[in-house]
Picture 1 (cartoon, rainbow, N blue to C red):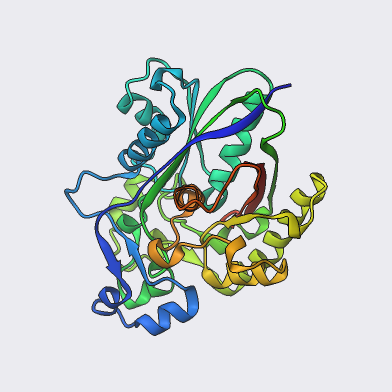
Picture 2: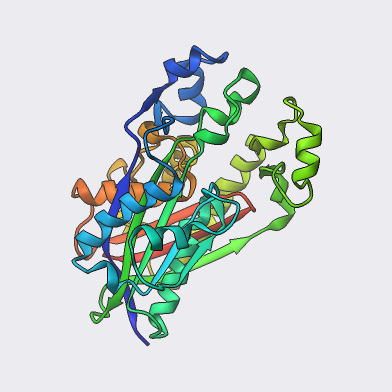
Amino acid sequence: MYNSKITGLGMYVPDNVVTNEDLSKIMDTSDEWITERTGVKERRHIKKGDGNSTVTMGVKAAKIAIERANIDKNDIDLILFATLSPDYYFPGSGVLVQEHLEIPTCPAMDIRNQCSGFIYAISTADQYIKTGMYKNILVIGSENHSGGLDFSTRGRGVTVIFGDGAGAAIISRNEDSSNGILSSHLHSEGKFAEELSLIGPSTNRWVPEIIEANDPNDISYYPYMNGQLVFKNAVVRFSEVIMEGLIHNKLKPSDINMLIPHQANLRISQFIQDEFGLSDDQVFNNIQKYGNTTAASIPIALTEAWENNKIKSGDIIVLAAFGSGFTWGSTIIRW
């Protein structure tokens, strides 16, 4: 059985910075209110006409990751695209990336696991490589949240949290068994599916019904989140799945050199940091700058941590996520 490792990382966020003060001008909120509850100070949003979409941002991040992996785009055997905000209802975003990159007949697959999407995609890539089927896999997490948020006081509890952006990684066959992806651990609990969800656009309410209703007050077309329930479950599941990964690899919390949690809420990350007794240097957070970018948050944070030399060879890196579904997971890496 082969081993796999991350050989290239890339990220892209739109130029348009939206601060808490900017949001306070269009809804009843404030910098203090947002910062206290989420830790977010600013986020990036696509501007109409700037050429950005979920796919094109993913392509921009992918090109950087491909260059850093020192491979040709035609060396990619598979594209895995994690998102909750695809450009089209169908086809999926992966095939659009394949077309943008001009890779002939490369297989592509979309991963629809929202905040946990990148962890699920990494795990999928790792298994394809371990079985010998593929050598180089492009994994992308990309989100365009701003196009579907309620920018009124009614929607502020959700809208202030989310931002747009993309991150990408090249997962490659690794001949050195002493490092690379050690293991991934995935879970879900579907009984909470509607506690963090977007119900409106679905085959249960298909096009004729949508057109006929044309109801501007129908909030089912905006994301819904039961914030307290999500927080309570997140802190428990984050802790469980991180510890599961450590135990599986005979590691202790003190062995963690860098924890990169999904950037859901700074308060959740701080709770987990305290739970495991980690210092500020052992946890990477950038939600303050980008907000919650869902499937893109871990690859964006991982890329920034690597670019800022916070990750070095031999380090134990822990990636962990929790989100809609509910789904959660962790990946343990020896860099």
